[in-house]
Length: 216
Image (tube, rainbow, N blue to C red):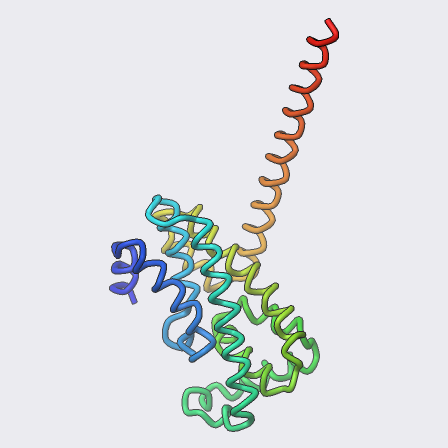
């Protein structure tokens, strides 16, 4: 794991974009999340953006898009394979957690899809379980896209603001993913709103000064 992280931090920008997108896509599409959570790659993408190696907007778009597409493939796998997916060797040892995930789907529906995005195990299996459950794809897509957006933006910004302290953030993220992400998103939205309000006030002040000069 540490060797892969070190390599990702030193690869050229095009390769870094490709790796981040591939891991984010494969996490649920082919269950790579059991081996390497895509969250780690996304976090490091934010770190690379903070150093100027990558473009932050580009990382955000790639992360969110790859997460949504990967989950859609995972959904289709579950829909087509059906109950046989629960007999896969990689899943049989997680029977208790799978049962809990399926119970959550029955009780919460689309919100289980949204909340599943914030836990490593559920990110890997929830799309397939949702396809298996028979939930219509449009409904799945709405909640999946919302979860992918909040998760992708939040984790990327965590890496961006953490910089070289990403290892400590990664440890905290694995323990309380949803809480940290929601805090980051809330702070980001607050900063954006304050800056927008300040720009609006500056424009109004400039217009007022111009009118005063014209009148004078």
